[in-house]
Length: 327
Image (cartoon, rainbow, N blue to C red; front, side, top):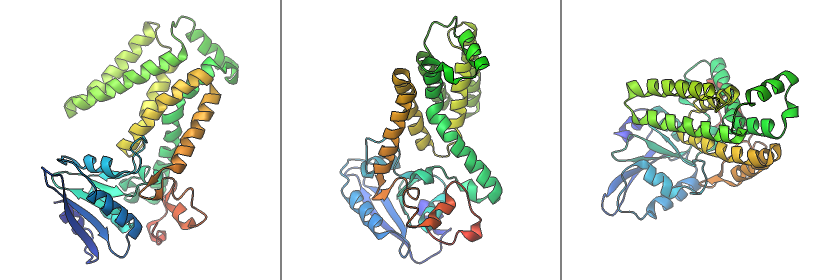
């Protein structure tokens, strides 16, 4: 079914589908899909080799394949994209990427993946380009909020209150006068509560889940502030951070950012802004060394000198008629 949906969108005889079976007991059918004259031959050989080297009894979902062929299993960042949209898979093929379809699974895998690709959405190319540029800019504004905002709150209130304007510093001091917990404990507890609410709402039926998540968040936030356990500004910070995480198009990428956020909170609680700076250095170094099937994760940001045209479709979405060069 998945291969047929892709075939209907790309009626090119050079679209190749190579079938194989993985799983000694499940014998799951897998389709390796690519366009012969566009695909990166090195990436194609690497993907095919890793698929042939998989040794497992059963493949029950495409995420099994993703985990077993990605470059770095220890990295929180996903190195393979997955999608349930045939148009997104067709777009990846036209960019020269490889698509892996797994039988009995509604999602397909797209490789290689980069940092920029996780910040893009299919809707960017279906709206007017000015609106798409605006929404994409909103995502990049949300990115540092998701990762750093609670850590900055902890660092500033605990180590560097002199950085705040006088009126704001007095307000923060007044709200913290009767709160028994330090700022880092507030941030960690509220973040854990929000993750608990998010996870609980996913396990409840769809019509009720979103309502329960919203109501429980409001009730818990209001109750903790009235009880004097948490400051109002901490609730605002955590709510804004959770809201910003929903602006990230990829769920796997957003989950990685949420996980990293806890590390930044811990660093900020120990070293203040210096800890945040050190954490940012470690994060950038990790992203610079991370690769997806031999392709640097930060492409084209780290290789723009070689191919400046690749920068067109990063933060700003160009007009369709100007997108003539393949990435």
